[in-house]
Each structure stands twice: as structure tokens, then as C-alpha cells.
Length: 101
Image (cartoon, rainbow, N blue to C red; front, side):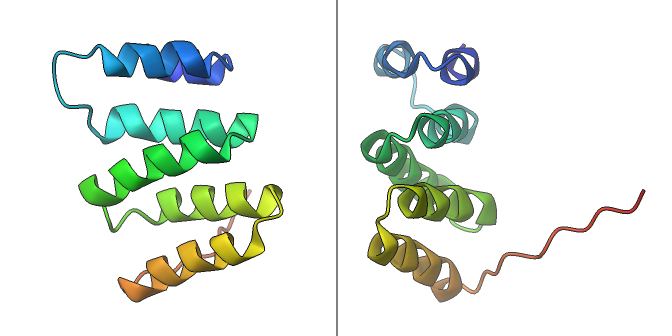
């Protein structure tokens, strides 16, 4: 449900649902919320979700890239660089994509 709400731009509903979970949300909850926040340009919610994802899966490069891009899109260049530095600090790097048709 969190994913569906996030994709539909219903971020407040997604957050409210997460707050009422009877269990601790995992990466499958925080990831869609981060992506929804990125799509909506909601830096504050994106950082909130990213911080939880960082605790759960610190080696997932996708989370760093989404958060750095969200900061960049908002013109927050220094914050974007901090996120990229965090990624490099744990020994990760973005592997360039390749598509062969």
C-alpha cells in the first residue's frame, strides 16, 4: 500500500499508514517512500526515509543515488555532495548502466 500511495503522489497517506504499522517498517516500506518523495520533490520526507534506509541497508547504492539526485534537483548541491561522500565512505560507487539491445 505504501508503494501504491507513493506512486500516486499520496505521500501524506503513505506516511500516515507507516505511522500506524503494528511493526517496524523495513526497506520495502522506506524505499518506495524515498522514491515517492523524490518524484514529488519532497526533500524533507526523502531525507527521513533515506535515514531509515541507511540504517537498514547501508550498502544499497540506489538509496544514495536517489537521495543525492533529490538534493541536486532541489538545488542543494552541498547536501548532494555529502550523500555522495557517504556512499564513497562506505566503499560504494555507482556502476554506470549499460543497455544492449
